[in-house]
Image 1: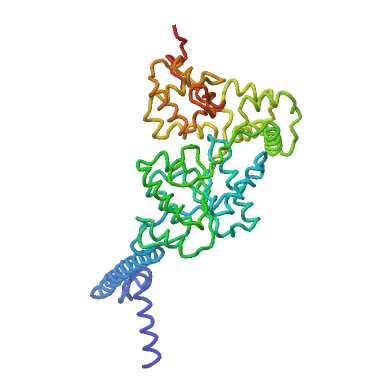
Image 2: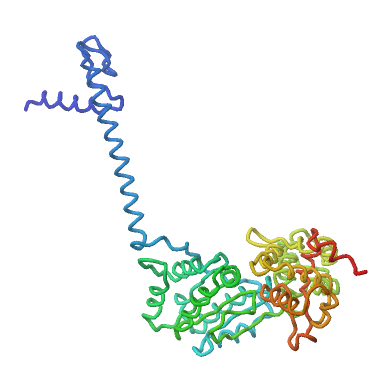
Length: 434
């Protein structure tokens, strides 16, 4: 083939695929777009090329879609819906006082298979997650568990057994052909006898919000039957799933000295390292007023440090605005924590429990079980018992140990404050009896 012919064919090929879609113009036509020429040759070539381009574009689009579908299928286990998104374990809190002995005790319990089913309970804001994270850190340091064998299982969104199961698969990084059962997960955990720790945080959500608590209990029981799998569970309710030999560790408020340390450290952090000057009796009164509850302390201190408000000023704000001064970051506030407990299905389905909560919120020192008859005369003894149990399960009230008749039943200051604002206590409850 002559070089001239090759050049002409090359030119024709270039012209046939140029972005304007036109062929070579004929004599007298527009050579730029090939629209003219004798016999309409340029127009015909243009239509052919446009058709080819459209076909090529369609084929590429279809091929790209097929490619994406294949990638999507290969990135998931066969025949399985995608597991829940995986979440990393949070870092332990830097400001952590007053719980060292408890952390050491729980770490020792987890070190022995016989006592390695531990449940940390307490009202919202008591610091359950902080303690659990500190325990995990210490367990690694003491070589009880390898770091890669401690699994964070956040349960706050697990409002059904199915969601809980999917979260378990995701957090334990186990894939299966289907996530409808627990068998693949149990088989994977049982394949190695290496000790592992599952930290199930906020377990009250699946336990109290699920419409099938029996299935939730079954999941936990099956995990507990693996002797080399340690369980560390945090939940607001002290009424834990049965059929498991739990080591219960309820959290009390901080002691006054630890509460002062937490407040001063958090205040300094929020105030750009400026120390709190007024840390005398007025600080002690503020801490006592908010019940020495860790979350309430940190949120109040952060608000005071950020704005430069003294403990005296914060105490006035607390008396006027209550828990509304305890706004947190984007994740939570004291009001959010209390609201979550009140939204549990077990509470919402019992109007008498909500009425009893309103009554008890007006009694700063609480009352005894026998005196409830005087404060809630409309409730029969059996209904009072049910209401008290409901509120205790949701961690909205506390009951001292001992016989029901003589034990003190009371509401923590933060919940008292929450209830007393924004009309949450009905007028008929506030009105004294005639």
